[in-house]
Picture (cartoon, rainbow, N blue to C red):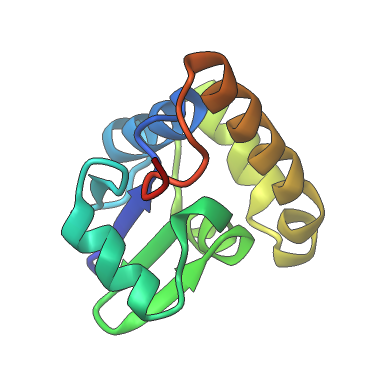
Length: 125
Protein backbone atom coordinates (compact mmCIF):
# COMPACT_ATOMS: atom_id res chain seq x y z
CA UNK A 1 0.00 0.00 0.00
CA UNK A 2 1.43 3.38 -1.04
CA UNK A 3 -0.56 6.12 0.68
CA UNK A 4 -0.59 9.82 -0.11
CA UNK A 5 -1.96 12.28 2.44
CA UNK A 6 -3.13 15.60 0.98
CA UNK A 7 -3.43 18.23 3.68
CA UNK A 8 -3.84 21.99 4.07
CA UNK A 9 -0.30 23.33 4.44
CA UNK A 10 -1.65 26.68 5.64
CA UNK A 11 -2.92 25.06 8.83
CA UNK A 12 -0.13 24.54 11.37
CA UNK A 13 -2.00 21.64 13.01
CA UNK A 14 -2.53 19.87 9.67
CA UNK A 15 1.08 20.44 8.63
CA UNK A 16 2.43 19.21 11.96
CA UNK A 17 0.29 16.05 11.85
CA UNK A 18 1.26 15.32 8.23
CA UNK A 19 4.97 15.80 8.82
CA UNK A 20 4.98 13.71 11.99
CA UNK A 21 2.98 10.98 10.26
CA UNK A 22 5.49 10.90 7.42
CA UNK A 23 8.56 10.92 9.65
CA UNK A 24 7.41 9.02 12.75
CA UNK A 25 4.24 7.17 11.78
CA UNK A 26 5.82 3.92 10.73
CA UNK A 27 3.97 3.80 7.39
CA UNK A 28 6.41 2.82 4.65
CA UNK A 29 6.32 5.07 1.59
CA UNK A 30 3.73 7.49 3.02
CA UNK A 31 3.81 10.61 0.90
CA UNK A 32 2.47 13.94 2.05
CA UNK A 33 1.38 16.70 -0.29
CA UNK A 34 0.44 20.25 0.58
CA UNK A 35 -2.90 20.72 -1.14
CA UNK A 36 -2.86 24.46 -0.50
CA UNK A 37 0.36 24.83 -2.48
CA UNK A 38 -0.45 22.26 -5.19
CA UNK A 39 -3.16 23.96 -7.26
CA UNK A 40 -3.39 21.20 -9.85
CA UNK A 41 -3.84 18.46 -7.27
CA UNK A 42 -6.42 20.54 -5.39
CA UNK A 43 -8.34 21.23 -8.63
CA UNK A 44 -8.27 17.52 -9.54
CA UNK A 45 -9.56 16.50 -6.12
CA UNK A 46 -12.30 19.14 -6.20
CA UNK A 47 -13.45 17.94 -9.65
CA UNK A 48 -13.72 14.44 -8.16
CA UNK A 49 -15.85 15.80 -5.27
CA UNK A 50 -13.17 16.06 -2.57
CA UNK A 51 -12.81 19.59 -1.21
CA UNK A 52 -9.79 20.21 1.04
CA UNK A 53 -11.83 22.86 2.79
CA UNK A 54 -13.87 19.99 4.25
CA UNK A 55 -10.92 17.87 5.31
CA UNK A 56 -7.78 16.02 4.40
CA UNK A 57 -7.69 13.48 1.60
CA UNK A 58 -5.95 10.10 1.67
CA UNK A 59 -5.17 8.41 -1.63
CA UNK A 60 -4.19 4.85 -2.39
CA UNK A 61 -4.21 4.44 -6.17
CA UNK A 62 -7.80 5.06 -7.23
CA UNK A 63 -9.13 4.63 -3.67
CA UNK A 64 -9.89 7.96 -1.99
CA UNK A 65 -10.88 8.72 1.60
CA UNK A 66 -11.91 12.20 2.72
CA UNK A 67 -12.23 14.02 6.03
CA UNK A 68 -12.75 11.90 9.13
CA UNK A 69 -12.62 8.71 7.08
CA UNK A 70 -9.19 9.68 5.70
CA UNK A 71 -7.84 10.31 9.19
CA UNK A 72 -9.37 7.08 10.54
CA UNK A 73 -7.82 5.00 7.75
CA UNK A 74 -4.45 6.71 8.18
CA UNK A 75 -4.49 6.32 11.97
CA UNK A 76 -5.27 2.60 11.64
CA UNK A 77 -2.11 2.27 9.54
CA UNK A 78 0.12 4.12 12.02
CA UNK A 79 2.62 2.27 14.17
CA UNK A 80 3.86 5.35 15.99
CA UNK A 81 6.68 5.68 18.46
CA UNK A 82 5.92 9.37 18.88
CA UNK A 83 3.66 10.17 21.91
CA UNK A 84 1.46 12.61 19.98
CA UNK A 85 0.90 10.14 17.17
CA UNK A 86 0.20 7.39 19.70
CA UNK A 87 -2.54 9.56 21.18
CA UNK A 88 -4.03 10.38 17.76
CA UNK A 89 -3.75 6.73 16.72
CA UNK A 90 -5.80 5.76 19.77
CA UNK A 91 -8.39 8.49 19.27
CA UNK A 92 -8.94 8.44 15.52
CA UNK A 93 -8.41 4.86 14.35
CA UNK A 94 -12.03 4.07 15.20
CA UNK A 95 -14.29 5.38 12.42
CA UNK A 96 -17.19 6.27 14.73
CA UNK A 97 -14.95 8.15 17.15
CA UNK A 98 -13.20 9.89 14.24
CA UNK A 99 -16.60 11.08 12.94
CA UNK A 100 -17.42 12.53 16.35
CA UNK A 101 -14.05 14.23 16.90
CA UNK A 102 -13.24 15.41 13.38
CA UNK A 103 -15.43 18.55 13.51
CA UNK A 104 -13.19 19.73 16.38
CA UNK A 105 -10.16 19.38 14.11
CA UNK A 106 -11.92 21.40 11.41
CA UNK A 107 -12.76 24.09 13.97
CA UNK A 108 -9.11 24.21 15.10
CA UNK A 109 -8.06 24.52 11.45
CA UNK A 110 -10.56 27.36 10.93
CA UNK A 111 -9.23 29.20 13.98
CA UNK A 112 -5.58 28.70 12.99
CA UNK A 113 -6.17 29.90 9.43
CA UNK A 114 -8.12 32.91 10.69
CA UNK A 115 -5.29 33.87 13.04
CA UNK A 116 -2.85 33.58 10.13
CA UNK A 117 -5.09 35.69 7.87
CA UNK A 118 -5.55 32.86 5.37
CA UNK A 119 -8.86 31.99 3.71
CA UNK A 120 -10.47 28.67 4.60
CA UNK A 121 -10.74 27.86 0.92
CA UNK A 122 -7.39 28.33 -0.84
CA UNK A 123 -9.28 29.02 -4.08
CA UNK A 124 -11.13 32.02 -2.70
CA UNK A 125 -9.56 35.49 -2.99
